[in-house]
Length: 358
Image 1 (cartoon, one colour):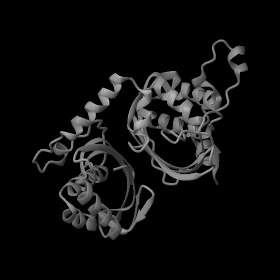
Image 2: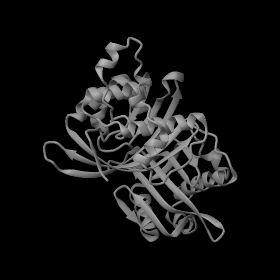
Image 3: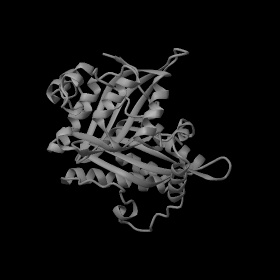
Image 4: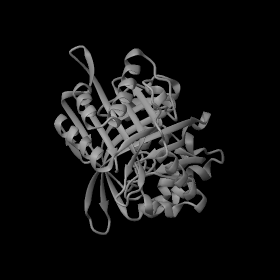
């Protein structure tokens, strides 16, 4: 069943752009009112999972992980009713020091709020299914479906949304976003730069230059070749095997189309559902798609921000370098979700979602 809300498609459409009603009488009647402890924002996880089931659920075992799961589900339960309502929910989800990377642009909370204020006046969002929520330590990676409705034209565009979020425990006030990455760098990047300072733009430029200048070391140790910028502990033999296979997938991609095609035959199941942006490919189609980007844009995957693993799912946020038509180079990030199954005694991926812009 579809649910309607006014929201931002740029980042945290479900969680940060969704807001609970908050009665001003609560604040005036109780001088000790703390929005983070308002019952409207703290419905139990079990109750919310009945209302908003996750299509591919994974476990949340620790106190920290359970806190993240509950915060995210409470956000999914709170629907946006304009900027002021969104900002109320933001007081629960964020701290004044929170940073959010919106489609590749790194923003302070104030800058993010400014961008949200503009976006909420232009778009409605039809919320669809919540696909998954992979929680590992103080990190989560989520994927969900939205349909963007332009208020002026009425044109609707389906958009799957992917996010990676690092949380911090604020005690009584619960888990809040420390830094998040909502959506990958894409066509909205240039417009979003208008919301940040010149100094921040310069920092973005330097970050891109550093990624472009990356030289992968000549080593067979893939953990050394592709160090994770924000590592989290991955427990269990199977889970670490999944992480190793994700690294092998990156490395085989960087070795060219022939190497990747051979690898893909063993990495993906014969019945693979490979979601790439707005398309779903079978095994032969995904290999053809990879060949296209390797040959046309010389796409190389060079920088890993995260690898999260929980149960049968793994998620990776990485950056790649591509050739541009003017002979230069540019960088874009990629968010991938992989579902592992055992077939004939070995692990393979039978479902995959990739969101990236190149």
